[in-house]
Image 1 (cartoon, rainbow, N blue to C red):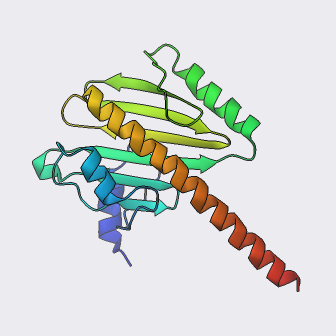
Image 2: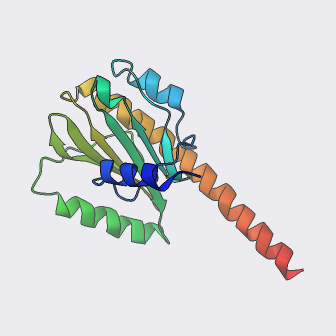
Length: 178
């Protein structure tokens, strides 16, 4: 169990990240090695931290320059609901430069782009993926491409994990009915 002092320090440190837990855990969406291989120029990645199966964050050693990569994904009640959520978020960022990103889910775009940070939103069927990036140096086009590829891995992994979770829940409910 993580001590209260460590949790408090993590909460203060990651105040800008939506409700991420600070317990070190393997990310079940994309491997630590995949992130290190995709972004080799960013050194000193720490093992991922995960709030639950749909959220992962990767961070570099702050003493060597802070770089943060966060994946947050969820499944909506229906594709139509996800369509509305995606469109609403896109409309909220219409005033920003919002280039479309091909090859990531059914549709995706880049928003809130500034030299060291960006956010990518993607949709695949009823699933929404948000990728938040905050790097100490300006983000290179090759890094955007690498992060989008990692996002595709996350979308596929989460769909599989979510299906397994739903199946286990159904099996448990079926066992309770007997």
